[in-house]
Length: 241
Image 1 (cartoon, rainbow, N blue to C red):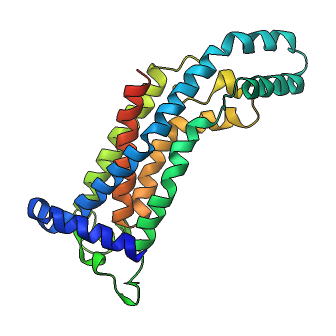
Image 2 (cartoon, rainbow, N blue to C red; image 1 turned 180 degrees about the horizontal axis):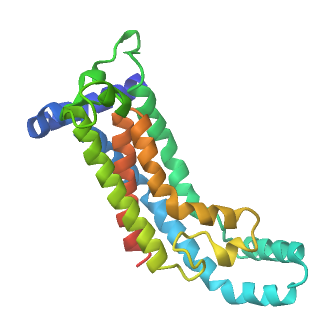
């Protein structure tokens, strides 16, 4: 973690002339963008996988007719079809899973008072008036929701709400061919693959859960989540247009 702390500090030093006291926050946003660029090939592969699953829908429809009275046999047949065509109904989750290590690194980095036996200097950095190591509860316990730090969080909540609304409306307005949900996991596959239908019902609302995450994690980790969520919204709009 000390290597990661050094990386963030170096990035902050480079960005300091442009962003001043918020240089570390800008460094986190830049770091998030780099992570998302590295994960982008997986996102493109997931998009191709969803298109491949869409192409299987006529064959899945035939399997439904053939095994209409035997749901268990239908599930096995659909799973065998996906295996035969080397298509995973859950491939869209891989880009998100690959980002978890970066998020947890930031979380632990800005939750630790010391690094390598020395004081964690990153905790002294801020986003405007809000310390990067603080949480929303700290802002509420200080000057309240409309204090200097509280207003920073209200601004971040507004961004998250806007992105979540965009994702939700797009999921309802522009469904993917295979799902009817726009999530990449849904009814056409989910009826036949155990557990997938339940996931499909939750996925459109996941962006709104980001509000809770932003409220309870250190501000630095919240910045990662907000930047990544915004990136995902733009990326999906481009890949699934």
